[in-house]
Image (cartoon, rainbow, N blue to C red):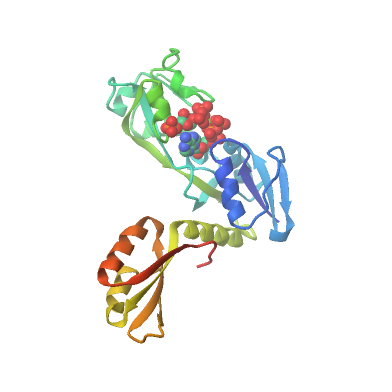
Length: 282
Ligand SMILES: Nc1ncnc2c1ncn2[C@@H]1O[C@H](COP(=O)(O)OP(=O)(O)OP(=O)(O)O)[C@@H](O)[C@H]1O
Ligand SMILES: O=P(O)(O)OC[C@H]1O[C@H](OP(=O)(O)OP(=O)(O)O)[C@H](O)[C@@H]1O
Ligand SMILES: [Mg+2]
């Protein structure tokens, strides 16, 4: 059985459970369940603190796990990214009182509060900046400046709402772009069953990113239409009862759906239909 660690709480927990459920795995019914066997799919889920998941994977106690890239890097665990999962996207940034700092060099000799001390210390070292101190806090880092324990913070930023509410502003380059990732042990053989899990998760990622587009187009315009919707490999072109028209089916990036429909319509395509992909294996 492939042992899979899944975040039990926090920002990663719900979207990770949703993705695994879309991939056909069992879901826990109660958030207090800590272990969930799924024998039909040959896996066993362990619900752990997101910060601990890299540690368990690095020691080989579990085979793979879902965590954030930022948490993985902060853990110093011998685990490695296996697959990017596309949710919990965030940046990791320095911030301080609005209008006071512009460059990471200004962090020299200052106190930095963060929940990610290893990540921050590593980054400052690469920039040749020596802070006075890196203060490790568990959360609510944005309040550290007002309370006088730090001059600068380094934290996860998604919308920036939390920073603005605290009267803070980012400065310097982003330290990191993070998202949820599936991790595995850096050394050793690939765990048995990881290939199936990977294909299933890739199927979910593709189903989320693409839609199926069907349309009818005059046979004389098929080549031009196919150039607009080349699909992943090659679109399906089928004859229609009216021999002057053909039907085309292709996968299209969800984000481009309306632009592609406009272009096809202008070209002369009609009966353009878009459907979601429920599941797929490429
Ligand atoms: N607002 C957010 N938007 C996107 N990702 C986030 C956000 N907050 C945290 N993350 C990501 O979630 C992971 C941190 O997990 P963690 O469980 O600490 O989340 P949390 O929501 O801060 O939980 P907790 O309330 O227990 O601190 C990191 O990978 C981080 O980048
Ligand atoms: O840019 P935003 O959209 O505002 O999101 C970023 C905030 O979200 C997370 O906090 P969380 O709610 O997890 O609280 P915490 O600080 O206690 O971890 C993170 O630590 C930031 O504070
Ligand atoms: Mg948090």
